[in-house]
Amino acid sequence: MHCFYIDKVDLKAHKVFISAEQAKHAHKVLRLKIGDQVTAFDGKGNQYRGALETINSNSAVIAIEKLSHFEPPLPKITLAAAIPKQSKFDAIVDKATQLGVDMLIPLISERTIVKPDLLKQNDKIIRWQKIAIEAAKQCGCLYVPRIAPIHSFNQIAKNAVKFDLAIIAALSAQVVFIKDVFKKEKPESVLVLIGPEGDFTQQEVKFACDSGAIAVSLGKNVLRCETASTMVLSILNYEWKT
Image 1 (cartoon, rainbow, N blue to C red):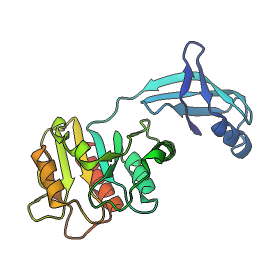
Image 2: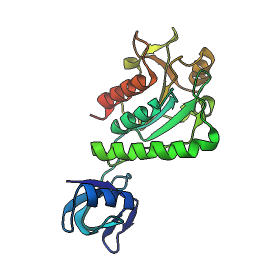
Image 3: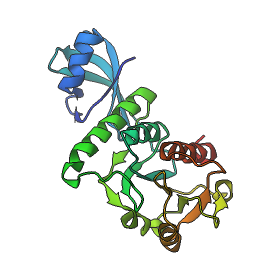
Image 4: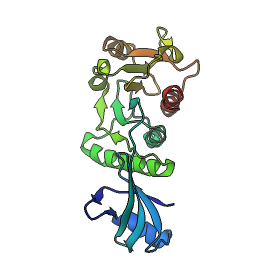
């Protein structure tokens, strides 16, 4: 059954409105027609099932037959990852969405090579948000992570104490194995800090730890930032979401 992301619902009229871009794809490519059964989600845990009431290249309307709400699984994970070279952050957004993050924060750290033009960051955020929506549609996730504006490392690390668990992946000697930081009880909130390919500086790791984070090792191999992000999120899913 085909699924659509929507941001416009009229519950009184029992109707869901599909955007023009998706309607055109549904009409021209998927060849959907009036009466076909489809689903839609709003990225906030609400799922709508129903039949297409109208459809053309400019718009489509679903007549709601069933509305279901699903609570987000705990813990709520915030991934703060340094922006890598080229378009690798696209892959981080895609994989992080599939692995159920609640929020994704693009970071600028001392060793981050890419320095995005802050005047154009809104375009990047919009693009990354679209990638998150498409990833959620593909994997059936009813929650779409919010892509936060670009932040400096210190802006985020200083808030580590506000999370039930905060971890920073580091290559320094004074770290613990990631398996040793898991608590018996499931935390409600987790912050994950992933650095650039040149790693966080010792000063950054110290700042994060002084703010409440735990420095962890991801093994002997030096991982690319997109690999490190996927690894940590996979471990968190194994421990607490499966």
